View (tube, rainbow, N blue to C red):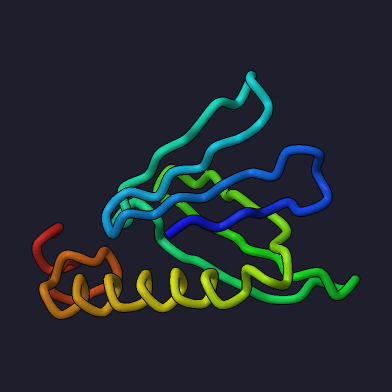
Amino acid sequence: MEISVNPKAPFPTVIAFDGRVLEFFFADQDMGSIRFHITHITAVQFASDKKGRQMLEFKTKSGRPIVMEVAPQEAGAVKNLVAFRGRIEQRDRRAGTDARSPAYRRGQR
């Protein structure tokens, strides 16, 4: 899956997701690309901001949020990505490997 974000930029950022690794390709050479395993993404939110723009926010285990504007035509792909992350979170909770699950917290004590 590939999603173009920051639609008003001269060169939009591209998000690629292969089912395991989420990679951000930035046009800015200083930023290059950033990769995260899907389990290192702690939350994904897709909502409109006060100006009506569709915004996508990723929260990571490192505490570094990544926020980007999404073009309207990419909304379907973004919703699929958000849903996939939700399924990963549910799986991890059932397995006790999500930091918010009681089984995980019991093992940490």
